[in-house]
Amino acid sequence: MDYYDLIIVGAGPAGSTLASALENSGKKVLIIDKQNFPRDKTCAGWVTPAVMETLNIDPEEYSHGRTLQPIRRFRIGMMGQPAVENDHGDVVSYGIRRCEFDDYLLSRVNAPKQLATPVKSIVRKDGNWVVNDTWEAPLIVGAGGHFCPVARLLGDGPGGHETVVAAKEVEFEMTPDQASACLARGDTPELWFCRDLKGYAWVFRKGNFLNIGLGREDNHKLTGHLEAFVEEMKSTGRIPQDLPGRFKGHAYLLYAHADRPLVDDGVMLIGDAAGLAYTQSGEGIRPAIESALLAADVIGEATDYSASSLQIYGDAIAERFGTRASEPDQGWQVPDWVKMPLASSLMRSHWFTRKVVTEKWFLHQEVPPLKVAV
Image (cartoon, rainbow, N blue to C red; front, side, top):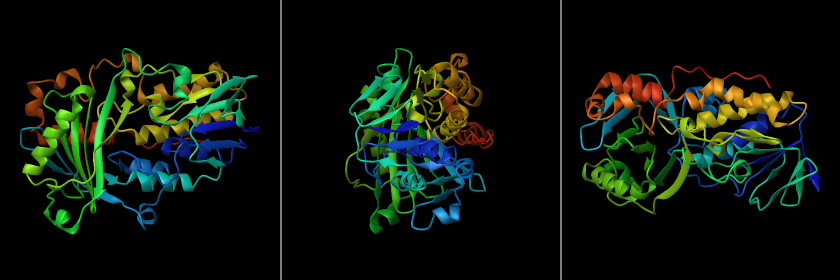
């Protein structure tokens, strides 16, 4: 049996950030993931300058041999009506490919890694957690996304009040003919809201790579909405007529509607495993990074891993992202005051689409980068 101070299940941005943050803490850390890296990851893939700053990533250095698409504009509309385009002037976000971004973050982790290793068992033994009858630690951290096996220790799947977003998307490298015909521009992601406001679709070009997808609350209608959106985008020349491969699905919880506990005795959840995606946009990379840093701060100072001791992390999450119980909005993307018929007019407004949809809901520009001392 190999012993560690903590085991992190999931080597994505949350898990790798936590492992890196604890490097000088004296904690013996093991990070486990079911896949090898680099690995394919379904995600639209953009990160704000705040994320790059928090992770101490130099954009110029990162861009060498990797996709880094500066974003200065957004094209936003409601399906079936003309879009509004806003120019932000400066770079307000970056397009990345998750297969490259996640591998880059994990490459900075010096802790032991067990990749291509599915978690088959997690057993409580003498106050510790034993994973796959091989590795043992008093603390286990779930960083494996919505279906993380550690999250199941704190409850069997989503509860009755949780809003689960289901999404389907495809990302591929366009041929020269496709790239020249595609009207979508790299510096201008396109966001298209469903008319019932239960989700939105996107067209996101990153150099010669194109990502197309749609996410909604109601999974049973997802395919129909996606097919209609794709046909509309093809007919207007926004995307190529011939799309390779098939759309891949994934799911996640929205912060304001997630019921999952964040901690228990010897257990912590971070990132999508904790259900931290922003409620209005579904964006999860920044919450994943920040939750990992908040967790590292608590773990680095902890003298024991009881639920009461780890609750400091839960309090820090509430302070950073708000208290779930106090969130009044029902539904996914937009609060009640934006509901139809007002929404149709608002989505034609340059002020609303820029100041509220883009800068507040998607970029969170009013929230400064997180500074945590580990």
